[in-house]
Each structure stands twice: as C-alpha cells, then as structure tokens.
Image 1 (tube, rainbow, N blue to C red):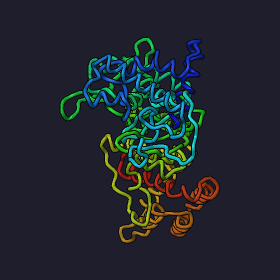
Image 2 (image 1 turned 180 degrees about the vertical axis):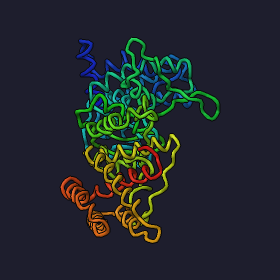
Image 3 (image 1 turned 135 degrees about the vertical axis):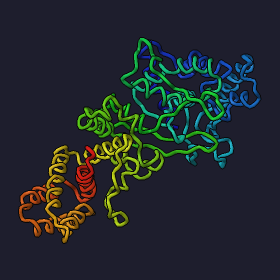
Length: 443
C-alpha cells in the first residue's frame, strides 16, 4: 500500500532531522508503539491486528497484554518474511488484504506476487498514521516534509487530548485533518501550539467528539503553504469496508488564486472583512464526487454550493431573486470570486460592472407600452453559449445603436478571452452585477 512508501519516506525525514539511523522496525519499537499503542486508549485503531483484538476484549489497559500483542505482530511479520508464498495480510500489515481476500475489509488485492520487505510492512504501520481525515470519511496521504513535520508535532498533542477525553481515541486521521487546519493557519503559534485551537465539539450524547474539517477547508489552508506546487495525493478510507479512490493532483496554485481573489476583490467590504474564506466556503460536491468528476483538485472542483441555480441552463432561464441578508451577500461574493478564478481575468469583473450600468440605463429608457428593451436584456442574461450571447447583443444594437461600442468590446472579450465553456459563467457574473444594481444590493 502507498502507506508503506509514506512510512519509509517519513523515516528518512525523521532520521535526517534527528541525526539517527533507525530502521522502520526500530522506529516502530522505540518511538511509534510507545506513543500510539502502549496506552489504554490508542491513537489509531489497527483493525484485524492483535492490538485490535485487545480493544474488542477490553484489555487495552493491561500493559502485559499490549506487549504480548506487539510480540505477536513481530512474530507474524517474521513468519511472513521467512516464507513469502502467501501475500502479507492485514493482521500484521496495515491496509493490506484480509486473510480471506473476498472480505469487504480486504484491500490492495492482486494476483501478482509482489515481495514485501520488513521496511515495507513496518512502514505501513507508520505511514497510515499520516492519513489526513476529512468530513465524509475519506483520508489523504501526501508525501511532503512539511506534512510530516506538522502531523508528527500534532501526535503528542492528540495523546494529551485523549488522556483528558478518552472518547476521542483511535481517530488519528480525523485528528490529523483538524490539526493541519490549525497548524498551517495564521493563528498557529509554535510557542503555544494549542492557543486558539478548538478541535472538539459536543456530540448528540453530550460527550466531546472531534470536529472534522471539510476537504475544502483543509485544501484552502494547505494552499497558503504550498501555493507554488501541484502535489499528488492518495485518497482512501479504512473501515468496515475499505475504499481506494487512488491518486489525484491537488493544484494548490489554483486554490490559492481563489483565496487571493477573494481578499483582493472583497476583503475591504465590511460584511466579509476579517473573515477567512476557508471558514465560509461550501463546495457543491463532496470529495468522492469531485474526485470522480475532475482530473484534479483545482478551481473547477471548488464550484460553490448552489451556484448552479444562477447559471443559465435549459432548465433555468430566469435569474433567481437576490437576498439581502448577510449570509446570502457573502455567498454572492464567493460566487463572483469563483467565476473570476475560472475566467482568470479580473478585468472581466470591471467589464461586467460597466456593462451592467449600461444595461440598466438602456432599460430605464423603456416606455410602459413597450417592453422590448427588458426582453432584450433578459435574452442577453439567459444566453447559454457564445452564439446566443452574440445574437442577444445584436438585438440590443438594433434597438439602441449607441450600444454598438460597448457590444463590440463585449464581443472582443467573448471571442478572445472567454472559452466557450466559460461563457455561461461570464453571463452569470454579468447577471449578478445587473440584478444587484437593480435591487440596490452592493455586489
């Protein structure tokens, strides 16, 4: 499993940082096991292993039983290494197939005989601890020294939280996601790591539980430290049924562009001043759906929740009425931010604003007896493609030739700077500007 590689890569980082030369087995015995498993409440639940059997038998508090379980794991690994006729299985190699490879907890099943080394197997124990958990149950593994440093720092903090709140044990991936969101935020203070840190919430039973972060929140926060890099991540989940999504690319420069546009364009507006985009943003798709729809996690995967209601489509020709409450206004700013990031051209925001003013003046000259001007504007703002948009501009010019220069500027942008796929997004941006001015909502 990829966790084996992550475990070995982390150990390279660890040995370099600490000027040591530990093997994966030595690190497991001297550092990893004491922190993660030599305690009543584990940091991670290693399903199907001898250590997990102590959980089901409620004997994790027995130090001697914990030692026996560790010895059993060593024995199983040793037996496998001395006779590799059968593949490693999950009772001693985390994330690998079950002894019965038809079980739903089985993972990484293959008919190929791939020899596994001692480092591979112990590396799986270490590497799986770097899973970054998100709402929805999917975890990410990312091979990067900054991730290793951050998560390793958080493990000792997690162990202290477990001592005070035993209910939150066995969930290191969930913890990792929460911790990363804090560690890479502007609130993190290395001299006081838990200042401004709120990892817990009260569950329905009144007991504390970990408050998971969304994939959007985690990737936004990480983008501030990886803004110049596209990084490969491995997505999976381990549980009653193991799921492997596979590898994806996280386009952090694009994600950072969203944050930068939001703060540059709207950061000085009182309703969003001092608010962080990662705390406000909701995406249309959960991680699983976004993974299946898009080749990578860039701007397109971050489509804001419910924006589609405002985009022209065969089922949506009338622009919904705008609301003036604070949450709605914030969402409208987020919609505009995402559209500008998709178009990747802030000049188009100015063009949309200018055009909206001209369209309002155009409609204001309409007489009560004739509504052709309003109809012409509605046709423009419901255009679903370049052809419809150009036809609607021609209709405007036929009614009022003074709009010729403005329409020529629009035509130039539509043809030269806006792809066919992005035309509906620009039309939506123009609609937001037009309808907000008509209703005196300042967008």
